Image (cartoon, rainbow, N blue to C red; front, side, top):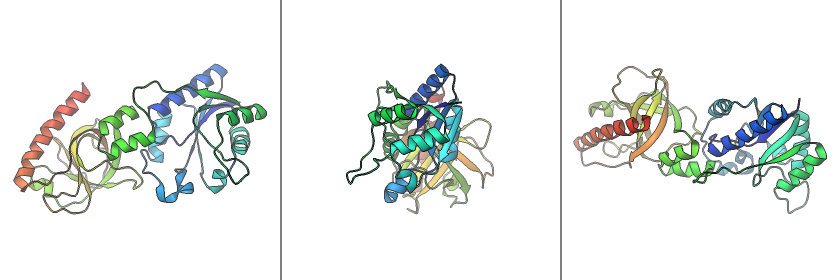
Length: 304
């Protein structure tokens, strides 16, 4: 049976991606066909520009889970390599979409591009009109997706910029959910415990995942109990104590227990403040009290 497909890297599975996927599903329902998403096993820049690969908003496992949560019928990961990158749009539509995926319809945004022109020193990306023409030749209906009607510009790049600036609240508005990051609990210096705020030091579960800007954040933590726990996290170098290497330390409010070796997932709700060097540990401990109170208030408001 033919399928209705869409192509993309879908990093973040943000509101724009979900808007496109909803149109794929609607087109599939209208035709009585399954819906299918075609994505890639790595960021295309790993082939085009390996020195400029952006950090990811979602790992492959996270992306798969989020895409499946939309209710799409199938997800297919293509290995992105030089052969695929060099493929013209016509060849891609013929050998991948038609032959391998049995695509009967392709839903695509008007400004989305894939494929390279087959010849000529001035090779450039193919465009929507080319896809329509090739589709008519191959028997694939090319359907223009509508744009997302939203007051903010939604893109993976815009979300990365927000997270790198510490504006996780804006990132949440673009993602449609809080940004999440996972790490394994490792042994640290136990400095937080000395200040009355024991922390779990986290080591990234995936180095390719984007880390928010330095600062203190209100977060929810998954991985310990059935429900997310309130917490505050510090990302930085601990300038008041020892100005060491970059660390990610989470203080889970009203919790105590041995969680070494466990993997925790942080859901970033709001940034409390930038990283600050205090005159002494006592001043830092006082600020942490204020941070904890603010975290409780922010998370309570977010829950309501």
